[in-house]
Amino acid sequence: MRLFDDEFADWRRPAGYFVLAPIAGAAAGLVRALQLRYDPKLAAGHPPHLTLSGSSGLGPIAPGTPPEELHRRLAAVASVTPVLTLPFGPPHRFMQTNVVSLPLDPHGLIRALHDRIARCGLPFGPSRFTFTPHVTLNLYRTLTPEAMRELLAVRVREPAIIDRLIVTATDDPRPPRTVLELPFCATVPA
Image (cartoon, rainbow, N blue to C red; front, side):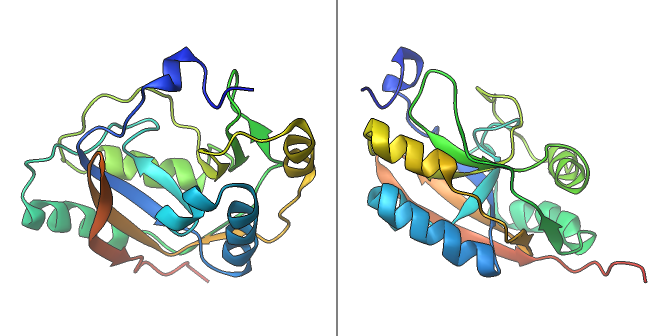
C-alpha cells in the first residue's frame, strides 16, 4: 500500500506563508489522540488545524510579503470573524491516497472566512486543490487495511471550535515556523 499516488509522491509545501485555523475545544484533544495513534509524525508538526491558504483553494502567500502587511490584512479579517463552532463529518479518504481527514462543510461560515482571506489583498500563489476544509488525521504513515478501517469508522462528535488564525512561514525541507497569531474579535449578534 503506497502513501500517495504519483501526483503526490514528490509533493512539498511551496515556500511562502500558510494560513491555518487551529482546532480548539474538546475536539482538539480527540483529534490529537487520533493523530498520535495513526500518524505520530503528523502530530509532531502542528496541533490539529485546518489550512485556509497554502494548499486548498488558495496557494501560499508570497514569501516576500512584509510581515507588517500580513498583520494588517489578516488582522482586518480576524477582527470581523466570530468564533466558529463547526461539526465534523465522518472521516474520509482522499481519492487515490491513504490520507484520511475529518471534513467540514465547505459552505456557510467557513466558506465566508476563506473568501474574506482570499479578498484581503494579499498575493496568493496558485493552489493545487479546490477548497475542501478538513483536518488531516494521517498523512505520512501508510496504514494497514485494519488501521484504515478503524480510522474510517471513528466519529468525532465534538464540534471544531475555531477562534484564531495562525500564519506559518514554510520553506521545505525546514519545518514551518509560526510568524503571526490573530484571535477572532467579532461578537455574534444576540
